[in-house]
Image (cartoon, rainbow, N blue to C red):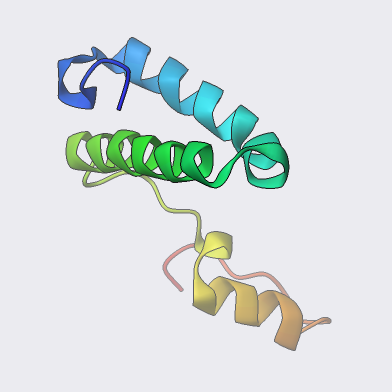
Amino acid sequence: MTGVEPNRLDDQQLMKELETIHRTRHDTLLYASNGALRAHNERMAQLEGEYLRRNPRRRVAAARTREGARERTGAAGATPTAPGT
């Protein structure tokens, strides 16, 4: 595996690495060798794991949860509710 260990990156460097790896994900999936895809998966998991370790209380958008997705698809005419209600 190449690259700096995620725990050695400062917050700004970690975000830059995450942005880069997510930007290249689609092309890697479609066009890279199996070995390159495995390396990409491993690096992405390391970077994302470090981000989650540093941000255990990150903001989670209600619409990005299973319950929020069900509300979007199951209640087409429903009135939106305020957070926490």
